[in-house]
Structure formats: structure tokens, C-alpha cells
Amino acid sequence: MLFKGGSKEKIERILELFQERELKPNTAIFMENMPSEALYIIKSGTVRISMMAGEGEEMGLLLLGPGEFFGELALIQEANRLVTARAEKAVELLLITRKDFQTLTELEPRIAARALTIIAKLLAMRIRTCQERLKQQIAS
Image (cartoon, rainbow, N blue to C red; front, side, top):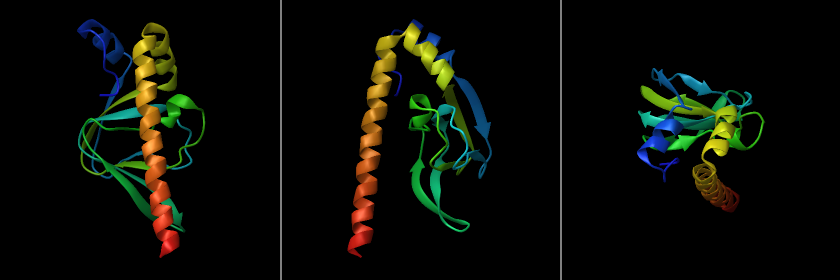
């Protein structure tokens, strides 16, 4: 879990900062180039992460399931989305906005620091995966 390491009381206080969303299959959560504002955690269902590969052509990158998170760059910087996220199946999400994450850093700095460490590790893994894919494409 992204936000772990606290007492039941602390976890409940953290969860108060989250919003819940339920989406039907094939519903866009966010689109590439939209402003980013929140990180999402999947409670149930699956989410497909993709990006535009050409004119009207979408390239699937990841399929994420319960317990996984996406949209993490929104907590780090104000920028447009690099990818599209779409509910593959019906999905239940928890989301935390950049503003609410800042509140978390003030209320529970240790938990927020752990969450940022987990995010950094995930980003590093995704960069390595993309690098390997690129190497394979160049070699082909």
C-alpha cells in the first residue's frame, strides 16, 4: 500500500483526504495532455494506461489492478498528463489531489515521505522498462 506505516487512527485521518470514484468500463479517468491534479489508487477493477502513438492510434502501456496506483506525477509537479488512463472494467478508485497531499505532508510527514519514496521507486522501474522496450525496438 502506498500510504502505510501508521496507526489505525493515522490511516483513518489520511483516508479522509481521499475522494472515491466509481467508473463504468471504458470510461476515461484522464487523457493525455490534460492538466494533472491527482494520484489514483485502484480499489477494484482494472485500469489501462496508454499513449497516442500516431494519428488516432493508441498504444497500450500498462494494465493495472487493485492496490496499484497511477497519476503519481501530479503530486510532484504541475504539468499535463503524459498518458491516458481508462477504466478497462468497472473500477473503484481512491484519489488524492496535489493540494490534499500537501496537507498530508504537514499532518504526517513520515508517511508522506515513505509514499514519495515508493513513488520514486515506481518511476525508476517504469523508466527502466521503457528503456528496455526502446532498446528492443531499435534492435529490431
